[in-house]
Length: 335
Image 1 (cartoon, rainbow, N blue to C red):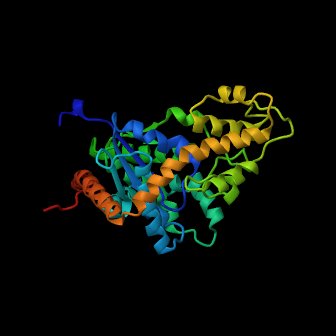
Image 2 (image 1 turned 90 degrees about the vertical axis):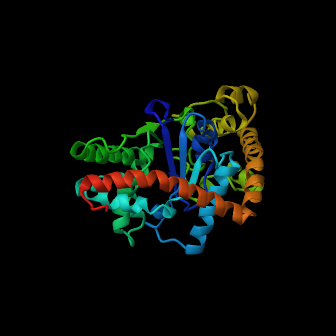
């Protein structure tokens, strides 16, 4: 295929280590469907990355299937996109070893996420946690990726990926494409924790601090009713002085396809109870069809297995070309 006709490659990997939040949905999942016309997209269930924390084996397998089903339930076509499990493509681990030999200890020791996770899991500070960014670099570079959707907490990992690729290319020529960050138009709609609006909503937070894409309507209403606000009483956007209220307005707007200003106008003169109810109904209405489709897909285990098998085969065909080139460049005998 001529280079000028090549679609840019977008690569995204998510650990199947817990449920995704509405922050993940608003910031990433709902936009992925819009990207398949302009990009060749790979969506990876990063099950190898998940092993840096002890996992219950059956739960990890189940969550891998659930995450694949969720991507499809959100509208991703597995024929137009490559949806696969990281462990099904051995070239990830193989390239990671090569790249380990081109990565410096000092670089890895400066990774803020390693420091954070080491503090949280002091009884399991393993080598995989330390070299996690190298495997992430391998994930990205295997597919000659052009763009990677990243949040603020992953920018440092993309930077080290670029550093490793540039270092390798400076020695062996243009082997790897240098990836750029992809900033979605929804980046401004940053969803914060419900009980600590100074922190990003995260699936690793307290149960009532986030809304899962799979939460029931009752759970959604309960969590939003408990969300932190303030004593001001006025519904307006003011991230500095009213972070909790601003977060609820942002959620309501994003889930009802309105602007924050429209939400404020519609709820003018009403109390925070009305804002929380409006946010809950918007979230429930948006998630209901996704949850129904997810349940339908999960009931067809053979279909999920076929999607992941097909995805792994297509991913492997691309990854093999890159890995073979790397092996040749570093001097490994290929026969």
